[in-house]
Length: 407
Image 1 (cartoon, helix red, strand yellow):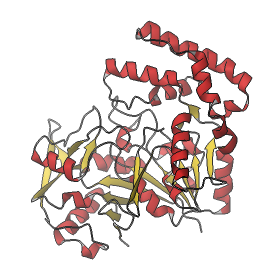
Image 2 (tube, rainbow, N blue to C red; image 1 turned 120 degrees about the horizontal axis):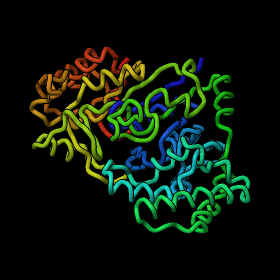
Image 3 (tube, rainbow, N blue to C red; image 1 turned 180 degrees about the vertical axis):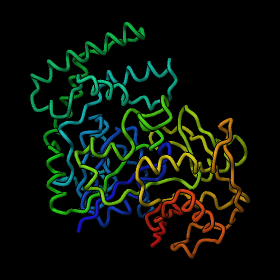
Image 4 (tube, rainbow, N blue to C red; image 1 turned 45 degrees about the vertical axis):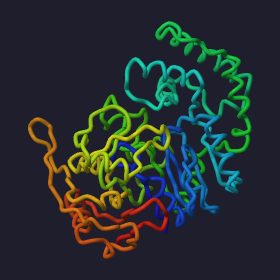
């Protein structure tokens, strides 16, 4: 019997999804992404070697696992080409196991230009990689898609109209320099091999795999609190990062999802602007950032740090129908005398905290729940009880083997 699992981040991204997908991929036959772009940054550490994946699903490091980029992504061809080349240089084989949906909308240089000049004025705190403008064109039904590369003459007509539109925005709205149509076209044509090697009707492929009973992992990017509908709007990403995004972004209905694993750090971080109720500005924040190496894998930007917010997570767990929890970076809390957890907000929307005694012991070598200090066990059980959702996995370090599975 197949076991199809959706893996989602429950915070503002950076929860450690890549490591968990990589660990669980060993027992799966396919790993599929359904939204976002190369603004994702999934960091994996295998045999002491660190890899950061921005587009390619985390299952690619397992030689027998098939990997899919679904129609819900927006795709930077240069970023994908660079990532594939780097992985091939590490002897990762892509032949007959990597597929890109023909319906992916493409990120153009003009999208990036618009994103960067606009964010300077609006201050949303985007990655500046063209993600938002690319999704805007998708919704407005004017996007250039991966499948358009199959006919260069038709592509030129469609691209010319879009680049002209973008240049009007750059010049007339932002007083910025336009980009030459020829340069934009050249970027697409120079990456035509990506289309020739990897294009696929991935909806048909997924339907075939599901009917065959394959074990599939669905890999979310960013985090649920960045969801365009359910996140801290307007400081959100431009895609559906919650469970609903899977069906629209891959063409797989909810009935074919057997379990939903929600991933949260043992504390909270956020990159960029936007509300953050439990954010800290003291020595505790400094300790979390230093010990947790809290810098964005994609942007290099320092992350804002704070205590775990169970009140926010309660809502996110409900939105996603989470069936199991994974708590990552528990080891980052090893040195704290006291640990606080937000359990509610007062009438002024300020966090109400529950205080826990820290365990002040190294947990990085723990390989079972019983190996953990009693105070750490109590902390996990409190999260489980408050969210009314079982904790199935606890991560105590970046490596594959630093993972505790709880029956």
